[in-house]
Length: 172
Length: 172
Image 1 (cartoon, rainbow over the protein chains, first blue to last red):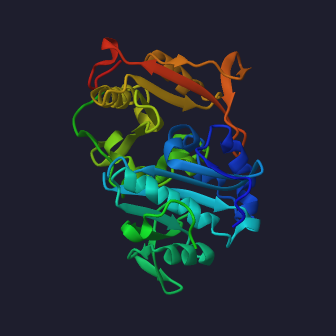
Image 2: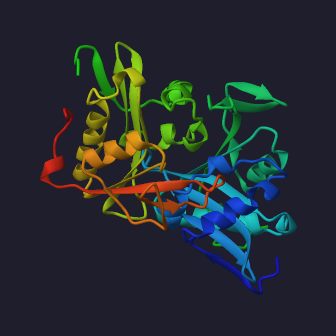
Image 3: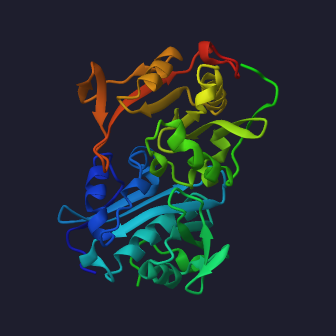
């Protein structure tokens, strides 16, 4: 991954508009913008990240420390510019979040993706997540019905942090 | 407000489906379900409430203690069954959240509503919220552009808890 001009930082509220401005393109035309309310860019900034290359937004991760479960951190949304896929950027964002979760005493990290998002599923398992048991199977993968407005199904991931995930940045 | 058979409790994950199942009807046909991701019913239950009357869902409030601002609590979404409007139920839900915010050392409570939701604006000001300054005016009210997918405007409310808001339930 080229490092020149690459910056990781906490988001500011104005980044919300930049992120929702790229989401449809980054998600191959799927409009998931409604799943990312602006409040995340107001109230969860200390556990979120944006990545920029020469002032262009190339990645983001929105997460939080689960208020109801004091051993757990949750990655709500993460995205990488299509031109930066397979560059290690997503791993880098995740590893930075892992370091933050560990530093906050949260050994358990959860994340969720859609059952048809094969790239996301491959990424999560490659970085060390386990797929949690679900209510049913889709394409041989356990998925959970989340009961949402669109009756979405979700693949749920869990990763227990240990020394293997202690790295700050870098990644495969 | 009739008290027989009225129960307030923390939500369980299964309440998510019940809540999104009534939202369109409770919001007069507007579909705001996308603004309430399921994760709130997994990770913010300790700062959320549902109200039931004889096992029927009649109200809910979803809030959290702002992770990035340690003096602040935020009410993300609250709704009341149309038949229970003006019964004091919304006030009751809010006052229970105020008590929780106070007990958690959060003297500042924020909430947001749409600029066209006159009932919600009247409710928030009646219960003691102040409308925060915005970027522009809609119908004489200060509103902020939130830069969201639909370029929604929002009326932002703030309430500083003092002895006047110490009550647990009841309300006007």
